[in-house]
Length: 551
Image (cartoon, rainbow, N blue to C red):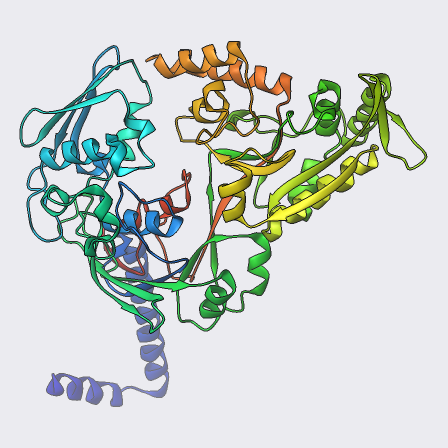
């Protein structure tokens, strides 16, 4: 090689000045052309693909208590479940339903393993469902699995028999995260909440538990997880996944700004104002809605359909979405996603005028204090109301906007803010509110039964408006039992229209789930999630590194 370059050098030295200029110019052109050609070939005959490597640290506000899919209730526990356990859909090779949707057969994939290398079989699936169905276990999944008889067909096959046809049962299977029988089989379910496995789970998910650290005061500081090479959904691209726990969102955001963590879930638009480093916001749709649920038993004026209609007309949803919610959500006037649309043939100004007209014609007259009153049942009823809402910045802002809108048409409105825990444990449990600003997250199946069927009016049901309509009940039941998608859609739309006409709630906006991460995180593919924990549904596809390969 040295001899070759010496010979080239001697030849060049023999050139005239003009010949040297020509030679070097041609050489530069050739090199540039070669690089350009190489770049063209590289760009057109190769593609960027995810590559394994790196580590990722998630910040979660809260503490793990029961990292067990059967009894997990908190967001923190559910999020860890998604990382450490696989759902039945992932474990299954095949899922089939009979023509009447009453018998379902699931065949598991070959050679499934728990993280302790024990075999995962149909016995684990049947055991999990039996534990869910036991009242002694007190599983939050109890109601979803009543009337289902699981039967072991073979080591890899399970049959489910339903007492009535249920078109949405596939979603139940997708939300089932089996637990290992060899770990829990000999432990009474009431003892699960004190067993070591509640914090050191043996799972089958994309990651396996490695260790956790704890402070002197008993606060669990962090979890260290590693990629599960036996995961039925494929080996995760990020080998090491850590969780750091925080007491509040402010602490998590401070850690993100310092570079101590790489991602935080459940963000609000206002939270992003305090981020001080480059970031990416992943906006994931939630199939649900935020609404003001009206408890007519607690407010006499709210029993008047004209009042409820006027209150709905008086709210400028588009303005609330843009000014208070940062534009990350969509305004809506009804409860089904395809009907989420705040626009009407009339402008908001004309709707506000219509709201005033409705109240005037219904006998609600303004007094000297500008508050409307109506003569009813031998007395005067004031148009006064209290809106109860969780004390989160965004929802408090929405409640204040609604209060201003309703006061402009002659109502006297008080906003009551309560911690989310207290709302769930007291106000919702006892239905102790007049107007409740809260959210319902539907399943992707859009099953309305848990939220609008009359049987769900009281705790633990989720019919927050205490709504009762026999026609709507029948439509919801029919949709649940129909195996035909077009029939289901028709029934659900009819039910939605009837609910909208009755105005048991005032729909405001459809939510989005905001996930904050560093800019190098790629592969988040979930466009729609059912709850916060579902942001991890495709975590095995998340990646920090890429490579090029031939197309």
